[in-house]
Structure formats: C-alpha cells, structure tokens
Amino acid sequence: MKFNVSSSDLNQGLSAVIGAVPSKATLPILETILFEIEDGRLKLTATDLEISIIEYIQADIEEEGSVAIPAKRLLETLRQLPNIPVFFEVDEKQNVKFKTDKGTYKLVGEEVSDFPDIPNMNDGVTLSTDTDLIRNAIQRTIFAVSTDDLRPAMMGVFFDIDADGSKFVATDGHRLVRFINKNLTSETALSFIVPDKALSLVSKSLDGADCEMTISEDHAQFSTGSTIVITRLINEQYPNYDSVIPRDNDKIMMIDKNQMLSTVRRVAVFSSTTTRQIRLQLTTDKLTIRAEDLDMSSEAKETVTCEYGAGEMEIGFNAKYLADILSNVDGDEAKFEFSTPNRAGIVKPADEEDGEEMLMLVMPVMLNSYA
Image (cartoon, rainbow, N blue to C red; front, side, top):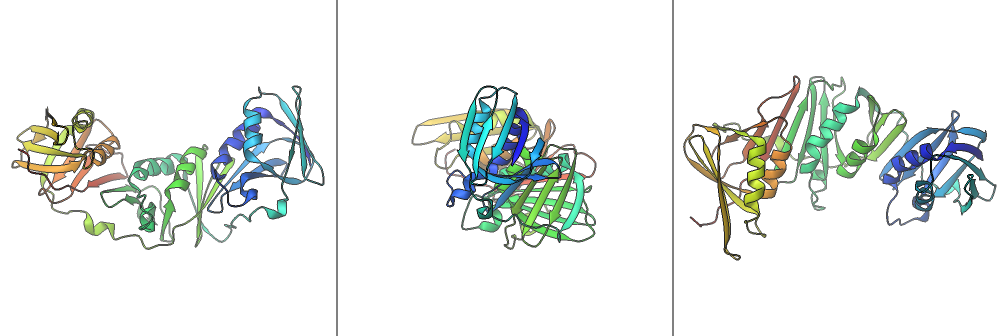
C-alpha cells in the first residue's frame, strides 16, 4: 500500500473518526484506525463496536491495500506537522512507514482481518433531509437525556417519524423535551432510540448541507459529505412520555428569558448544595425567585418583572434543571404554563419557526418550610 496525502487533510480525517476510538479498549484492534483505498480515495474507519465513523479524504494512490494503524500515536504526530505532503508505505508484514521533508516515522500496524465488521445498512430505510435540521434536533434535546444505567431506554433521544412529521424526545424523569419538526417525514413510520454519545458525535462530525439517515432494525446511519456515522440503536421500549405532559396548565407567565436565566443562576448560588432547590413566587406581573441554604445560613431573593395575571402561586424547582430548560429556549422571551405547585411546569419559546414546535417540561420539587 502506497499513497501521498496532505498532512492537513489526513489530520482532519483522523480527527473526524477519533471519537469512535475508545479511550480504554478491551481489544487492541479497537485502538487502531482502518486505512483502505476505495474509489480512488483514502477511507478511514474507526469503531468501538457500538459506534463506527467513516471518513473519506482525497489522496494520490500509488498502490492499493489496507492496514490498521494505531490511532493515538499517528494523530499526535500529524498534529505537530505543518501542512506538508506525507508519503505512506505499508509492506506485507503491516509495517507502516511515513515520510515528510521533516523526517521518517515507523509504526507497526495490525492485521486488517482482525478489524471488526462495520454494519451493512443496505436493507435500511433511507430518508433525505438537511444537516442543520438533524443537528438542531440533537442540540435541542440531548441535554435532557438520562445517565441512569438502570433506565437504558432513556439514555438516548427518541425519534418518531411518520408522514406527518417528526418528533424528537428526551427525558431523564426530571425534565422532558419534545421537539416537533414537520419538514422531516417518512412514508414508512419509524420509531427508534439513538444513544446520546452517538448523537454528540453526529452533531460534531456532519458538515455537509444534505444529510441521509438510514434506519435498520438495529442500527442508524447518518451520512453527509465525506462523513458517515453508524450507531447501534437502543432496543428498548421508550416510556409513554405523552401521558406526563399536562393538558390543563392555564396559568401563563411571559418573561424575558435571559433576565430570568441570569437571576436563577445568581440565586442558585445560595441554594442547598444537596437539593439545589429554588422557589418561584408569582404575583401579578411580578416573579420573585428565592433560595436558602439552612446549613450555611445563606439566602437570596430577587424580583423580576413578567406578564402574569393568574392567581398567586408558589412552586419549587431544581435550579440546574430550570436553568438548563431556559438555556434551550430560542428567542428572547419564554412562555411558562403552570397549574398547581405539584404539577409539572411547561416552558415554550414565545415565538417559533414555521413547522417547528418546542415543548419543555420540568418537574417541581417539594418546597421546604422556610418563609
């Protein structure tokens, strides 16, 4: 195997796939990146057996072949090089030699036959969309994914796509996010759960304008430009999230999102480090946010203006969860919908794009007794 490649192009290609190389591999072969020649281009593949990333880069091919090269040492070497040509040569014993005008470097590659098979997605259902839509759906939901190993179904984002549009849902039991987009449709109804790690890599890796998403029984593939990300799906039943969304929250509050977010963050500094509890006291056109840490004898109270005309109410929330929700509200104004202090609060953007609908839910916490 012989080829010439720009160090900058190869560095970008390796950086694109390195996310699938496990930091602590159970098998030595997983610490490598597979180099192959396909259709006159250099194909790089990395996998941790759950997620696989493939990247194509341009190269001058002199002799075809394949080799699995240790990822970390190669990437660290290339990162220190300026943008210069690099010549690679691999012999029949998998010895890898690469040369630049700066010097010569040698590595021992692994047998290609030991590299894990990448899932075949030819029998999957393929949908064409745009990369921004997928990235937007990921960014709006991934913050609410659960990290609880005992609830594996909630450790990913639930995709529900049919002829009417798409729903993307994430919840950890304390927060719930449902993002609806009418522009991504499928004649074949599809429901599947994608792990959050895979979605983080998808969001970082995909850089083309158009995106193809292919779904099989056990895997999902996202491809755009020169990058392909394949992930194993979470084969669990997603909880009935629709049943926990209140239908009769009739106490409406409109408020400046950024003002409320900064207030929540300031007041939260004085909350209990255990519960992170803050309380919201609503009166006509006024919101008072309070927190107290009895152990540290500290407390804080701030009042902000809002639009609110329903009856007085007091409700408690975990400050971090509320801040996360507010951080993901688009636009300058947030709309809160409340019912009673023991019912979930709903948060929405005041204005939304055509064909989109964002709903975020945060569960209340039991208020303690301080006045």
